[in-house]
Image (tube, helix red, strand yellow):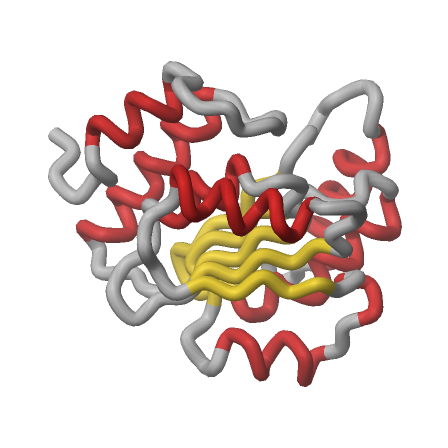
Length: 185
């Protein structure tokens, strides 16, 4: 039985796509994250949630419902056109009222100090990578942010094994070979 799960009506609204949010974030992914969140809650695992590649805020709005007390939701994107405003509106309309920060940045240009300053010693509980789909972009995101993922934290990769984006799978596999001794499963 799920006891810490986000509000069931909110979850059902997202699962049934009862909103006008644009994006590619599907019910099985949402349900999986809700279950991981449940496991984190039961095991008292804490840390921030970071999304790299926000687009217009569909998954970001969903992730806001997983934020617990003393956690922050961070969204990194280059935010072209009006996407920054679209994300803020999506969060207003469909998100939870939580501490969040939208950061307009190219994550390939961030250094270690930039990342440390944001997470403020709390670590990352959920890292959702959905930005550039080229090999070097994905590998850079993994190498830059993974050191801050807490024990039992999760890294969610978008479009893994999608034939349109072979760079994602290649970067993940290379990251797993670099990650020795193996920290991630």
